[in-house]
Length: 196
Image: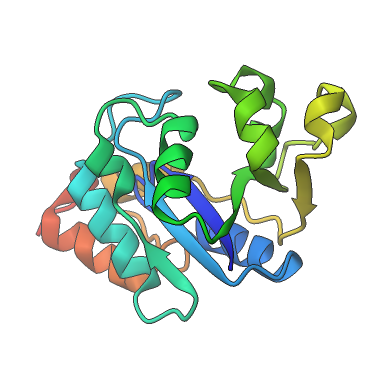
């Protein structure tokens, strides 16, 4: 099967993440999307919610959505969540699948800096999804990477986890920015300055 991997901190997961996943699935006929909250992302530190809470919010966000799964592999591996380590584990566990790694347009231009990018690019296809304020520049990538990146278009929805956390902390509405189930989880857990 063709599996799209949607990694991220998901602190919290929001509609922009879900739209990007669906755009990649639809554009490239992926059979399933596997969401994998990172344990400790290399480019961010100090998540507001624990790993278990981010995993549970992600499960709440995709519950009942056909073709969407949540895997806690990066939580199991522990430490900093480098994509190469995650993919080695996925290739070991699921050698029968073909994997596609979904990333935002802002991350495409940083691919040359990823850990062991040569090995990743040799075995993995990246799908870059457009975001507001970022331009995809595949021509700027080293030639050996250009064939490893596909593009997908999505509605330009400017939602970020940071904006969601700020609105929650100020008591503002986040309706339609995050799934209702995720909002209910956040309030129940008293995350991001909300009160249970």
